[in-house]
Image 1 (spheres, helix red, strand yellow):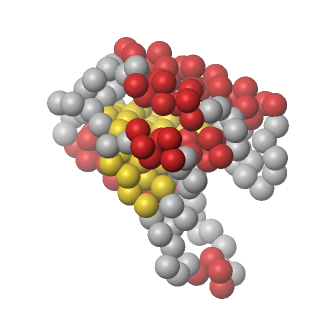
Image 2: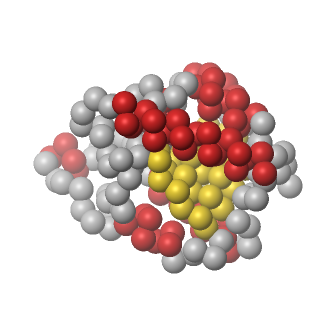
Length: 171
């Protein structure tokens, strides 16, 4: 099976959720999956769900909590760079058939690493590895590199009416 590059981006809800759906589908087919999450370092409900498939889905987090309400600190950059270097090796080994780089676009937006670094590790992966990159603000260079791009567009969201994130729905 040839692996493609998918990008899920946009300001609408559902990018991570879509990638989790793909991870569960792949696990159902017996394919090993890596769910690598940037920026976030806490245990969100999606992590709890994926842990139920631990025989086929591996979870790695390259974040120190969710810092999007503050400036990235040196430690945030170091954790993301360490994760990117680890992923370079993982993608070259080819142990996983699906690798999801959740919120990697946010890591790019906050300059935790460069789009050239990300594209380089994706290009040097095993050819049968599917890679999914999620997060708002996908840069044009990554979109150009991708084989499939889905943009989630917010049409209406109850958050604008003051509804806070709810466990099991948004977090």
